[in-house]
Amino acid sequence: MSSPLSKPQIITHIQKSLNYTVFDSKWIPCSAKFVCLGNFPSGTGVIQIYEVNQGEAQLIKEVEKPKAIKCGTFGATSLQQRHIATGDFDGNLNIWNLETPDVPVYAVKAHKEIVNSIDGVGGLGIGDGAPEIVTGSRDGTVKVWDPRQKDSPVANMEPMEGETKRDCWTVAFGHAFNDQDRCVCAGYDNGDIKLFDLRNMSLRWETNIKNGVCCVEFDRKDINMNKLVATSLEGKFHVFDMRTQHPTKGFASVSEKAHKSTIWQVRHLPQNRDIFMTTGGAGNLHLWKYEYPAQRCKKDSDCVDVGVAGSVNLLQNVTLSTQPIASLDWSPDKQGLCVCSGFDQSVRVLIVTKLNIV
Image: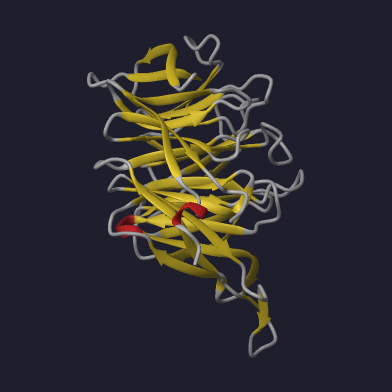
């Protein structure tokens, strides 16, 4: 029998209380710094930059913005520039140079309502092709932006005339393994998951998981689609095997109930795509590992390929707070280092041990 200490441990390295509501936190690539995004009680937005130094998180910059900031990504920037793209409560998409964050280097009124979710690809050496940003909004639309093109999106996925507009809660890029292919996955408040093929400008696949979709993430953005995790209200998440798409059954999946509360986010470990962390509405984190089946694909009765789902094992879990942990971001540079923020107005730097032996 293995001892509990042989399993990965989730250790709080630094905990910092904030005087505002923090919605998102992100590591700044190739640095010991992270950025926090949120809003002050007065309703204005805030961007804070912290540096991890000798076991402390030191505030090195703070800027106030007119609108509350909901989400951010470094995914479409170069490693040299490291500009962060943010979405705010007024539907604006802004890109900031964190060295001089007073005026955005790119700004567009992206949506009529709040930008709930943002993702980037084609920057940081991750994903082939153009640097692009995807935004999902309460107005029901999902839009793809190229920062080199002003004012209008390069793609706009919106409900058909007469269709009900659903609140889009989450967006993610994937399948960006060459200059032509790229997909966007979006999750909605009614449980819909839609996969848009940007190469053909078509809806490639859709399903419904019966509960509002809080977060979707591919295990890697820059490979031929492999796995997709979707988290939902009421503590359930689904792992879809994206390698084999059956014409009628779609993608094989396995679902797991982590706990009773909402799973706000899922984040895959950059150094191992089969390990991922989910963040919970009761202030908990769960670390999971996906195990592939013996065969990922089999023939159905009509000799058509159908995917086979694997299984999910819980490696470790920890409760950090009584409030939801709304965001988590792994360090791309140091395995096991992550930053997370919650509605207890705190940001935490965590260390997860023994990830190389699971």
